[in-house]
Length: 447
Image 1 (cartoon, rainbow, N blue to C red):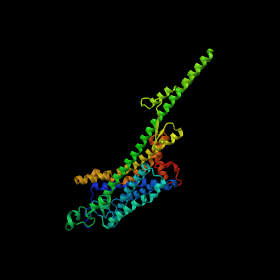
Image 2: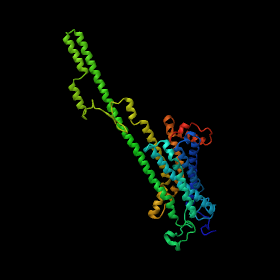
Image 3: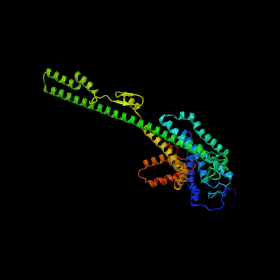
Image 4: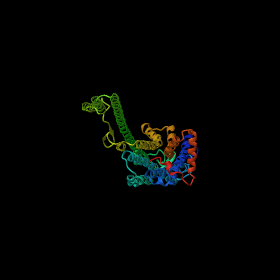
Protein backbone atom coordinates (compact mmCIF):
# COMPACT_ATOMS: atom_id res chain seq x y z
CA UNK A 1 0.00 0.00 0.00
CA UNK A 2 1.06 3.59 -0.58
CA UNK A 3 1.62 6.01 2.28
CA UNK A 4 -1.91 7.39 2.07
CA UNK A 5 -3.68 4.03 2.17
CA UNK A 6 -5.17 2.63 5.28
CA UNK A 7 -3.50 -0.19 7.15
CA UNK A 8 -6.75 -1.20 8.85
CA UNK A 9 -10.12 -1.68 7.17
CA UNK A 10 -12.18 -0.44 10.14
CA UNK A 11 -14.27 2.70 9.72
CA UNK A 12 -16.11 4.96 12.08
CA UNK A 13 -19.88 5.37 11.98
CA UNK A 14 -19.43 8.95 10.80
CA UNK A 15 -17.37 7.84 7.81
CA UNK A 16 -19.99 5.24 6.90
CA UNK A 17 -22.80 7.82 7.12
CA UNK A 18 -20.95 10.32 4.93
CA UNK A 19 -20.22 7.63 2.35
CA UNK A 20 -23.74 6.19 2.09
CA UNK A 21 -26.12 9.12 2.68
CA UNK A 22 -25.47 10.96 -0.64
CA UNK A 23 -26.48 7.87 -2.62
CA UNK A 24 -30.12 8.23 -1.51
CA UNK A 25 -30.52 11.97 -2.04
CA UNK A 26 -28.59 11.93 -5.32
CA UNK A 27 -30.96 9.23 -6.61
CA UNK A 28 -33.90 11.55 -5.94
CA UNK A 29 -32.06 14.34 -7.73
CA UNK A 30 -31.35 12.17 -10.77
CA UNK A 31 -35.01 11.18 -10.98
CA UNK A 32 -36.18 14.79 -10.61
CA UNK A 33 -33.84 16.12 -13.29
CA UNK A 34 -34.64 13.18 -15.58
CA UNK A 35 -38.36 13.96 -15.26
CA UNK A 36 -37.81 17.59 -16.30
CA UNK A 37 -35.67 16.48 -19.23
CA UNK A 38 -38.07 13.89 -20.59
CA UNK A 39 -41.08 16.15 -20.10
CA UNK A 40 -39.58 19.05 -22.05
CA UNK A 41 -37.98 16.94 -24.76
CA UNK A 42 -41.26 15.14 -25.46
CA UNK A 43 -43.25 18.35 -25.94
CA UNK A 44 -42.34 20.17 -29.17
CA UNK A 45 -43.99 23.41 -28.12
CA UNK A 46 -41.98 23.60 -24.90
CA UNK A 47 -38.73 22.85 -26.68
CA UNK A 48 -39.17 26.08 -28.65
CA UNK A 49 -38.93 28.40 -25.63
CA UNK A 50 -35.74 29.82 -24.17
CA UNK A 51 -36.84 28.97 -20.65
CA UNK A 52 -37.34 25.30 -21.45
CA UNK A 53 -33.94 25.04 -23.10
CA UNK A 54 -32.37 26.64 -20.03
CA UNK A 55 -34.10 24.05 -17.87
CA UNK A 56 -32.77 21.28 -20.11
CA UNK A 57 -29.22 22.60 -19.70
CA UNK A 58 -29.63 23.03 -15.93
CA UNK A 59 -31.12 19.56 -15.50
CA UNK A 60 -28.40 17.95 -17.63
CA UNK A 61 -25.70 19.56 -15.53
CA UNK A 62 -27.45 18.45 -12.37
CA UNK A 63 -27.69 14.85 -13.60
CA UNK A 64 -23.91 14.77 -14.05
CA UNK A 65 -23.34 16.26 -10.59
CA UNK A 66 -25.82 13.85 -9.01
CA UNK A 67 -24.14 10.85 -10.64
CA UNK A 68 -20.83 11.96 -9.14
CA UNK A 69 -22.49 12.26 -5.74
CA UNK A 70 -24.09 8.83 -6.17
CA UNK A 71 -20.69 7.24 -6.92
CA UNK A 72 -19.44 8.79 -3.72
CA UNK A 73 -16.42 6.94 -2.35
CA UNK A 74 -16.47 4.12 -4.90
CA UNK A 75 -13.95 5.76 -7.29
CA UNK A 76 -11.57 6.57 -4.41
CA UNK A 77 -8.34 4.51 -4.44
CA UNK A 78 -8.86 1.33 -2.44
CA UNK A 79 -7.41 1.52 1.07
CA UNK A 80 -7.58 5.32 1.33
CA UNK A 81 -7.87 6.42 4.95
CA UNK A 82 -11.46 7.18 5.93
CA UNK A 83 -12.96 6.27 2.53
CA UNK A 84 -15.61 3.67 3.33
CA UNK A 85 -16.44 1.58 0.26
CA UNK A 86 -13.46 2.75 -1.81
CA UNK A 87 -12.77 0.37 -4.69
CA UNK A 88 -11.14 2.66 -7.27
CA UNK A 89 -7.78 3.98 -8.31
CA UNK A 90 -6.11 7.36 -8.66
CA UNK A 91 -7.35 7.53 -12.25
CA UNK A 92 -10.99 6.84 -11.33
CA UNK A 93 -10.80 9.38 -8.52
CA UNK A 94 -9.35 11.96 -10.90
CA UNK A 95 -12.11 11.25 -13.42
CA UNK A 96 -14.83 11.69 -10.80
CA UNK A 97 -13.19 14.88 -9.56
CA UNK A 98 -12.94 16.33 -13.07
CA UNK A 99 -16.57 15.74 -14.06
CA UNK A 100 -17.75 16.62 -10.58
CA UNK A 101 -15.93 19.96 -10.55
CA UNK A 102 -17.30 20.80 -14.00
CA UNK A 103 -20.86 19.95 -12.95
CA UNK A 104 -20.61 21.53 -9.48
CA UNK A 105 -19.58 24.80 -11.13
CA UNK A 106 -21.87 24.60 -14.16
CA UNK A 107 -25.06 24.04 -12.13
CA UNK A 108 -24.72 27.24 -10.05
CA UNK A 109 -23.87 29.17 -13.21
CA UNK A 110 -27.07 27.96 -14.86
CA UNK A 111 -28.98 28.95 -11.74
CA UNK A 112 -27.55 32.42 -12.10
CA UNK A 113 -28.57 32.45 -15.77
CA UNK A 114 -32.09 31.41 -14.75
CA UNK A 115 -32.29 34.35 -12.33
CA UNK A 116 -31.07 36.64 -15.11
CA UNK A 117 -33.84 35.27 -17.33
CA UNK A 118 -36.53 36.16 -14.79
CA UNK A 119 -34.98 39.61 -14.31
CA UNK A 120 -35.03 40.34 -18.05
CA UNK A 121 -38.57 39.03 -18.54
CA UNK A 122 -40.28 40.72 -15.57
CA UNK A 123 -38.32 43.89 -14.88
CA UNK A 124 -37.14 44.78 -18.37
CA UNK A 125 -40.05 43.13 -20.28
CA UNK A 126 -37.89 41.25 -22.75
CA UNK A 127 -39.83 39.31 -25.34
CA UNK A 128 -39.03 35.82 -26.55
CA UNK A 129 -37.39 37.07 -29.75
CA UNK A 130 -35.11 39.37 -27.72
CA UNK A 131 -34.14 36.50 -25.43
CA UNK A 132 -33.30 34.30 -28.40
CA UNK A 133 -30.71 36.83 -29.54
CA UNK A 134 -28.63 36.17 -26.39
CA UNK A 135 -29.68 32.55 -25.88
CA UNK A 136 -26.45 31.15 -27.26
CA UNK A 137 -24.47 33.02 -24.59
CA UNK A 138 -26.83 31.92 -21.83
CA UNK A 139 -26.42 28.28 -22.83
CA UNK A 140 -22.77 28.11 -23.84
CA UNK A 141 -20.90 30.36 -21.40
CA UNK A 142 -21.56 28.29 -18.21
CA UNK A 143 -20.17 24.97 -19.55
CA UNK A 144 -17.18 26.74 -21.12
CA UNK A 145 -16.26 28.44 -17.83
CA UNK A 146 -16.92 25.31 -15.77
CA UNK A 147 -15.01 23.10 -18.20
CA UNK A 148 -12.03 25.46 -18.24
CA UNK A 149 -11.85 25.45 -14.45
CA UNK A 150 -12.13 21.65 -14.36
CA UNK A 151 -9.29 21.31 -16.87
CA UNK A 152 -7.12 23.62 -14.74
CA UNK A 153 -7.75 21.38 -11.73
CA UNK A 154 -6.79 18.38 -13.81
CA UNK A 155 -3.48 19.96 -14.79
CA UNK A 156 -2.73 20.90 -11.16
CA UNK A 157 -3.49 17.38 -9.90
CA UNK A 158 -6.06 18.70 -7.45
CA UNK A 159 -8.59 15.86 -7.52
CA UNK A 160 -8.25 13.58 -4.52
CA UNK A 161 -10.43 12.13 -1.77
CA UNK A 162 -12.35 14.90 0.05
CA UNK A 163 -14.51 13.54 2.89
CA UNK A 164 -17.15 11.72 0.82
CA UNK A 165 -16.24 12.25 -2.86
CA UNK A 166 -13.23 12.90 -5.05
CA UNK A 167 -12.77 16.63 -5.43
CA UNK A 168 -10.19 19.34 -4.75
CA UNK A 169 -8.23 18.16 -1.72
CA UNK A 170 -4.64 17.72 -0.52
CA UNK A 171 -2.95 14.34 -0.62
CA UNK A 172 -2.15 13.05 1.92
CA UNK A 173 -4.83 14.71 4.01
CA UNK A 174 -3.34 17.35 6.32
CA UNK A 175 -0.09 17.73 4.39
CA UNK A 176 1.86 21.01 4.46
CA UNK A 177 1.23 23.25 1.45
CA UNK A 178 3.61 25.74 -0.11
CA UNK A 179 1.36 28.78 0.41
CA UNK A 180 1.43 28.55 4.22
CA UNK A 181 4.59 26.62 4.98
CA UNK A 182 6.90 27.42 2.07
CA UNK A 183 8.41 25.23 -0.60
CA UNK A 184 11.07 23.77 1.70
CA UNK A 185 8.61 22.37 4.26
CA UNK A 186 5.79 21.46 1.87
CA UNK A 187 5.15 17.72 1.60
CA UNK A 188 1.92 17.39 -0.42
CA UNK A 189 2.14 14.63 -3.04
CA UNK A 190 -0.93 15.97 -4.89
CA UNK A 191 -3.34 18.85 -4.39
CA UNK A 192 -0.82 21.42 -3.19
CA UNK A 193 -2.59 24.60 -1.94
CA UNK A 194 -5.93 22.82 -2.41
CA UNK A 195 -7.70 25.16 0.02
CA UNK A 196 -6.90 28.14 -2.22
CA UNK A 197 -8.28 26.40 -5.29
CA UNK A 198 -11.41 25.33 -3.41
CA UNK A 199 -12.24 28.99 -2.88
CA UNK A 200 -11.11 30.12 -6.33
CA UNK A 201 -12.78 27.33 -8.31
CA UNK A 202 -16.06 26.86 -6.41
CA UNK A 203 -16.77 28.55 -3.07
CA UNK A 204 -16.00 32.09 -4.22
CA UNK A 205 -18.02 31.89 -7.48
CA UNK A 206 -20.93 30.20 -5.70
CA UNK A 207 -21.12 32.90 -3.03
CA UNK A 208 -20.98 35.57 -5.72
CA UNK A 209 -23.82 33.84 -7.59
CA UNK A 210 -25.86 33.65 -4.39
CA UNK A 211 -25.54 37.43 -3.99
CA UNK A 212 -26.38 37.97 -7.66
CA UNK A 213 -29.50 35.79 -7.48
CA UNK A 214 -30.66 37.50 -4.30
CA UNK A 215 -30.22 40.92 -5.93
CA UNK A 216 -32.00 39.81 -9.10
CA UNK A 217 -34.99 38.50 -7.16
CA UNK A 218 -35.17 41.72 -5.13
CA UNK A 219 -35.33 43.71 -8.35
CA UNK A 220 -37.98 41.35 -9.74
CA UNK A 221 -40.20 41.67 -6.69
CA UNK A 222 -39.68 45.42 -6.53
CA UNK A 223 -40.94 45.60 -10.12
CA UNK A 224 -43.99 43.47 -9.37
CA UNK A 225 -44.87 45.49 -6.26
CA UNK A 226 -44.52 48.80 -8.10
CA UNK A 227 -46.86 47.53 -10.82
CA UNK A 228 -49.37 46.41 -8.22
CA UNK A 229 -49.28 49.79 -6.49
CA UNK A 230 -49.79 51.56 -9.81
CA UNK A 231 -52.70 49.27 -10.55
CA UNK A 232 -54.15 50.00 -7.11
CA UNK A 233 -54.01 53.74 -7.72
CA UNK A 234 -55.70 53.29 -11.08
CA UNK A 235 -58.41 51.14 -9.52
CA UNK A 236 -59.05 53.78 -6.83
CA UNK A 237 -59.36 56.54 -9.44
CA UNK A 238 -61.64 54.33 -11.49
CA UNK A 239 -63.96 53.78 -8.53
CA UNK A 240 -64.11 57.55 -7.89
CA UNK A 241 -64.95 58.21 -11.55
CA UNK A 242 -67.70 55.59 -11.59
CA UNK A 243 -69.20 56.93 -8.34
CA UNK A 244 -69.20 60.51 -9.67
CA UNK A 245 -70.92 59.47 -12.90
CA UNK A 246 -73.54 57.49 -11.00
CA UNK A 247 -74.27 60.46 -8.76
CA UNK A 248 -74.60 62.73 -11.80
CA UNK A 249 -77.04 60.30 -13.40
CA UNK A 250 -79.12 60.15 -10.22
CA UNK A 251 -79.31 63.96 -10.06
CA UNK A 252 -80.38 64.20 -13.69
CA UNK A 253 -83.01 61.51 -13.17
CA UNK A 254 -84.37 63.30 -10.07
CA UNK A 255 -84.44 66.64 -11.87
CA UNK A 256 -86.21 65.14 -14.88
CA UNK A 257 -88.82 63.48 -12.64
CA UNK A 258 -89.46 66.75 -10.80
CA UNK A 259 -89.80 68.65 -14.06
CA UNK A 260 -92.26 66.12 -15.46
CA UNK A 261 -94.35 66.25 -12.28
CA UNK A 262 -94.43 70.05 -12.31
CA UNK A 263 -95.47 70.13 -15.96
CA UNK A 264 -98.21 67.57 -15.35
CA UNK A 265 -99.55 69.53 -12.36
CA UNK A 266 -99.63 72.75 -14.37
CA UNK A 267 -101.42 71.08 -17.27
CA UNK A 268 -103.98 69.43 -15.00
CA UNK A 269 -104.83 72.68 -13.18
CA UNK A 270 -105.85 74.38 -16.39
CA UNK A 271 -104.04 77.51 -15.46
CA UNK A 272 -103.40 80.49 -17.61
CA UNK A 273 -100.74 80.78 -20.17
CA UNK A 274 -98.68 82.63 -17.62
CA UNK A 275 -98.77 79.73 -15.17
CA UNK A 276 -97.96 77.33 -18.01
CA UNK A 277 -94.94 79.41 -18.94
CA UNK A 278 -93.91 79.46 -15.29
CA UNK A 279 -94.14 75.66 -15.12
CA UNK A 280 -92.05 75.33 -18.26
CA UNK A 281 -89.49 77.70 -16.78
CA UNK A 282 -89.45 75.62 -13.61
CA UNK A 283 -88.91 72.45 -15.59
CA UNK A 284 -86.12 74.10 -17.55
CA UNK A 285 -84.42 75.31 -14.38
CA UNK A 286 -84.74 71.82 -12.85
CA UNK A 287 -83.02 70.13 -15.78
CA UNK A 288 -80.42 72.81 -16.54
CA UNK A 289 -79.03 74.61 -13.47
CA UNK A 290 -78.39 78.34 -13.64
CA UNK A 291 -75.03 79.56 -14.83
CA UNK A 292 -74.14 80.69 -11.31
CA UNK A 293 -74.62 77.12 -10.03
CA UNK A 294 -72.55 75.72 -12.88
CA UNK A 295 -69.77 78.18 -12.12
CA UNK A 296 -69.98 77.47 -8.42
CA UNK A 297 -70.02 73.72 -8.95
CA UNK A 298 -67.13 73.89 -11.35
CA UNK A 299 -65.16 75.99 -8.91
CA UNK A 300 -65.98 73.73 -5.98
CA UNK A 301 -65.20 70.63 -7.99
CA UNK A 302 -61.54 71.62 -8.08
CA UNK A 303 -61.45 71.52 -4.29
CA UNK A 304 -60.49 68.22 -2.62
CA UNK A 305 -63.49 68.39 -0.28
CA UNK A 306 -66.02 68.20 -3.12
CA UNK A 307 -66.53 64.70 -4.50
CA UNK A 308 -69.71 65.08 -6.53
CA UNK A 309 -68.18 66.73 -9.57
CA UNK A 310 -64.51 65.92 -8.86
CA UNK A 311 -62.80 65.10 -12.17
CA UNK A 312 -61.08 61.74 -11.74
CA UNK A 313 -57.89 60.56 -13.40
CA UNK A 314 -56.75 57.11 -14.36
CA UNK A 315 -53.10 56.28 -13.83
CA UNK A 316 -51.21 54.32 -16.41
CA UNK A 317 -47.55 53.47 -16.83
CA UNK A 318 -47.09 56.15 -19.47
CA UNK A 319 -49.20 59.13 -18.46
CA UNK A 320 -52.25 60.51 -16.69
CA UNK A 321 -55.45 60.34 -18.68
CA UNK A 322 -58.67 62.18 -17.74
CA UNK A 323 -61.84 60.27 -16.94
CA UNK A 324 -63.65 61.69 -19.96
CA UNK A 325 -61.94 59.05 -22.13
CA UNK A 326 -64.13 56.33 -23.51
CA UNK A 327 -64.37 52.99 -21.71
CA UNK A 328 -62.37 51.29 -24.47
CA UNK A 329 -59.53 53.78 -24.17
CA UNK A 330 -59.55 53.58 -20.39
CA UNK A 331 -59.36 49.81 -20.54
CA UNK A 332 -56.33 49.85 -22.79
CA UNK A 333 -54.47 52.37 -20.63
CA UNK A 334 -55.15 50.59 -17.36
CA UNK A 335 -52.65 48.04 -16.00
CA UNK A 336 -53.91 44.58 -16.91
CA UNK A 337 -55.05 42.59 -13.88
CA UNK A 338 -54.33 39.31 -15.61
CA UNK A 339 -50.87 40.48 -16.58
CA UNK A 340 -50.13 41.49 -12.99
CA UNK A 341 -51.27 38.11 -11.71
CA UNK A 342 -49.13 36.38 -14.31
CA UNK A 343 -46.09 38.50 -13.39
CA UNK A 344 -46.47 37.62 -9.72
CA UNK A 345 -46.82 33.93 -10.53
CA UNK A 346 -43.69 34.04 -12.67
CA UNK A 347 -41.81 35.95 -9.96
CA UNK A 348 -42.88 33.41 -7.33
CA UNK A 349 -41.72 30.59 -9.58
CA UNK A 350 -38.34 32.24 -10.06
CA UNK A 351 -37.96 32.77 -6.32
CA UNK A 352 -38.69 29.09 -5.68
CA UNK A 353 -35.91 28.06 -8.07
CA UNK A 354 -33.53 30.36 -6.19
CA UNK A 355 -34.66 28.89 -2.85
CA UNK A 356 -34.09 25.39 -4.22
CA UNK A 357 -30.52 26.38 -5.03
CA UNK A 358 -29.99 28.04 -1.65
CA UNK A 359 -31.26 24.98 0.21
CA UNK A 360 -28.65 22.80 -1.46
CA UNK A 361 -25.81 25.18 -0.54
CA UNK A 362 -26.95 26.58 2.81
CA UNK A 363 -25.35 23.99 5.08
CA UNK A 364 -22.21 23.82 2.95
CA UNK A 365 -21.90 27.60 3.25
CA UNK A 366 -22.49 27.37 7.01
CA UNK A 367 -19.79 24.71 7.25
CA UNK A 368 -17.28 26.93 5.45
CA UNK A 369 -18.16 29.94 7.65
CA UNK A 370 -17.65 27.91 10.83
CA UNK A 371 -14.41 26.56 9.44
CA UNK A 372 -13.17 30.10 8.79
CA UNK A 373 -14.41 31.53 12.10
CA UNK A 374 -13.57 28.71 14.51
CA UNK A 375 -11.27 26.50 12.44
CA UNK A 376 -13.53 23.50 13.07
CA UNK A 377 -16.64 21.82 11.70
CA UNK A 378 -19.61 20.13 13.38
CA UNK A 379 -20.64 16.69 12.25
CA UNK A 380 -24.46 17.28 12.34
CA UNK A 381 -24.01 20.27 10.02
CA UNK A 382 -21.73 18.25 7.76
CA UNK A 383 -24.39 15.53 7.59
CA UNK A 384 -27.01 18.11 6.56
CA UNK A 385 -24.56 19.44 3.98
CA UNK A 386 -24.01 15.95 2.54
CA UNK A 387 -27.77 15.30 2.59
CA UNK A 388 -28.93 18.49 0.85
CA UNK A 389 -26.09 19.16 -1.58
CA UNK A 390 -27.11 16.44 -4.09
CA UNK A 391 -30.82 17.37 -3.89
CA UNK A 392 -31.14 20.25 -6.34
CA UNK A 393 -32.59 18.18 -9.18
CA UNK A 394 -35.28 16.90 -6.82
CA UNK A 395 -36.10 20.41 -5.59
CA UNK A 396 -36.17 21.74 -9.15
CA UNK A 397 -38.67 19.03 -10.12
CA UNK A 398 -40.92 20.00 -7.21
CA UNK A 399 -40.84 23.64 -8.30
CA UNK A 400 -41.42 22.66 -11.92
CA UNK A 401 -44.47 20.54 -11.01
CA UNK A 402 -45.89 23.03 -8.53
CA UNK A 403 -48.01 25.13 -10.97
CA UNK A 404 -49.72 22.01 -12.29
CA UNK A 405 -50.46 20.86 -8.74
CA UNK A 406 -51.87 24.27 -7.76
CA UNK A 407 -54.00 24.39 -10.89
CA UNK A 408 -55.38 20.90 -10.27
CA UNK A 409 -56.23 21.75 -6.64
CA UNK A 410 -58.09 24.83 -7.84
CA UNK A 411 -60.04 22.85 -10.44
CA UNK A 412 -60.84 20.00 -8.02
CA UNK A 413 -61.54 21.53 -4.59
CA UNK A 414 -63.38 18.39 -3.48
CA UNK A 415 -60.24 16.22 -3.68
CA UNK A 416 -58.16 15.64 -0.59
CA UNK A 417 -54.47 16.54 -0.54
CA UNK A 418 -53.53 12.87 -0.21
CA UNK A 419 -55.60 11.89 -3.24
CA UNK A 420 -54.14 14.71 -5.32
CA UNK A 421 -50.57 13.84 -4.39
CA UNK A 422 -51.20 10.17 -5.10
CA UNK A 423 -52.66 10.99 -8.52
CA UNK A 424 -49.81 13.35 -9.42
CA UNK A 425 -47.25 10.78 -8.31
CA UNK A 426 -48.81 8.09 -10.52
CA UNK A 427 -48.90 10.45 -13.50
CA UNK A 428 -45.31 11.54 -12.88
CA UNK A 429 -44.07 7.96 -12.74
CA UNK A 430 -46.11 6.84 -15.74
CA UNK A 431 -44.86 9.79 -17.82
CA UNK A 432 -41.38 8.23 -17.84
CA UNK A 433 -42.70 5.25 -19.77
CA UNK A 434 -45.59 6.65 -21.82
CA UNK A 435 -45.01 7.38 -25.51
CA UNK A 436 -47.61 9.99 -26.30
CA UNK A 437 -46.48 12.75 -24.00
CA UNK A 438 -49.95 13.94 -22.97
CA UNK A 439 -51.40 17.38 -23.33
CA UNK A 440 -48.70 19.86 -24.21
CA UNK A 441 -50.70 22.81 -22.91
CA UNK A 442 -51.05 21.37 -19.43
CA UNK A 443 -47.61 22.49 -18.47
CA UNK A 444 -47.52 26.05 -19.61
CA UNK A 445 -46.41 26.72 -16.10
CA UNK A 446 -43.08 28.37 -15.75
CA UNK A 447 -43.21 31.14 -18.30
